[in-house]
Amino acid sequence: MASDGLGPSFVAYAAAKLRQHMDQLTRAVALVGPGELWHRVNTHTNSVGNLLLHLAGNVRQWLLAGDRGLP
Image (cartoon, rainbow, N blue to C red; front, side, top):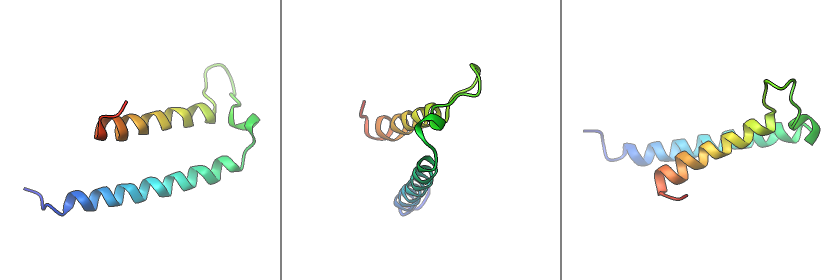
């Protein structure tokens, strides 16, 4: 069986990585204007803004709903 200390260590590491990636996404989004954020190259692609909305939804689904049972 895994050490009891592994769970808290993993959670701390994962939380730090999520904060790091959020900081990177925040800096990147700040470099573009709303027009660029929502621009679609063609009807078969998604905008960066749409991809970020999906990413946020996935994070909420996995972390909040999956881990904490929240809607």
